[in-house]
Image 1 (cartoon, rainbow, N blue to C red):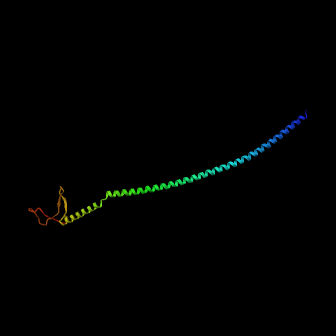
Image 2 (cartoon, rainbow, N blue to C red):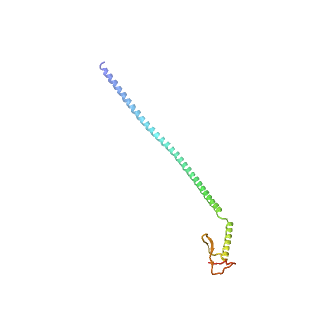
Image 3 (cartoon, rainbow, N blue to C red):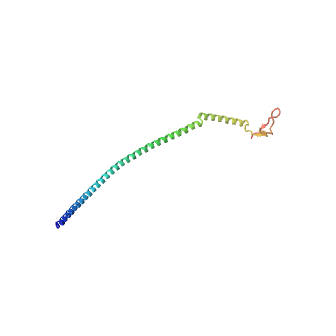
Length: 169
């Protein structure tokens, strides 16, 4: 058994090496298949992610368009309200101004009455001037009594000569 044993041993090692080589080839083929499968999965995932992103962006785009439309509607409504408030404020301020004018300014009847009164006063002043109403009057003396300029060259009147002629200006 001496010589067959190394032969058996060599045969066993050869078979073992052949088995290892077969295992390595199968492992390499499995790894290659795994790499191809991984690439296919990667391509599939990329396609799915791209499709998902596109759908999301489409949805986002639609929502953005809706939001923009809503903002435009809101702006139109706000512009309408602003116009209405501005018109109301203008009308109210005009009404308040007219009301204040109506309360503070005299009516036509009051103006006519004041004009008639002025005309009477003007006529009274003319009559006074005709009758010597434009005499020079002053306050005289320590008590501030009313005095008038008289014409000393004219005659005196009254039972005791107490009346003198007023000197016209």
